[in-house]
Length: 242
Image (cartoon, rainbow, N blue to C red):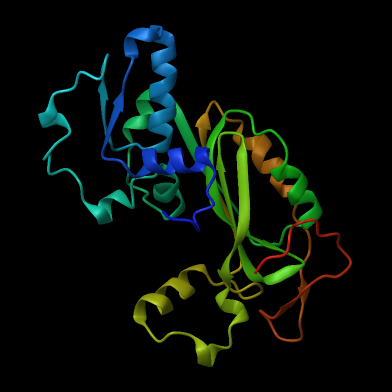
């Protein structure tokens, strides 16, 4: 993507798999049947819609990968299973069900204690293949945090501000925005929320949920809701967000 692209290799590879409409599994002759099943599970956990082609020595019919007419940019943006789960594709039944891949969305309204959440981000997440979503910290109530996990790599950064922290006269005037805000608005917290999707193979949903629940804390409410002040009594080990 250019010199400014600082994504690590694992994230780049994962995002390419998520965006693809055809995925070739080459050298299938070099692995056992059980190993091939695991590879398919991992690919399906990242992309539930792409056509998977198995090959050896890269022998693939050109008609399967050239001029297929399969690619659609708008649809490709919806390929990732995490996007389907996070943005409410309730009626979607992915082919990944065949591979016992499961997913769930962790949701909460209260803020995270930054020290506790930072510790969670640096722990092992057994059987989690991919995770992505948004969060807010009690010490940074105006900023929207994003977490993105692929394999053993977990990245986090700020991606903007919550609408609750923007004066209403500065809100964009559009029906779609109004509809979105009404859907996610909470009287106490506005649109601030914890919303992280986890995708994996044999995950312990209850354990992950319980662990994240222990990271929640209380917000410092202002005189008028949903105004929230930053808590200064908590340790915040996260790096500075621009």
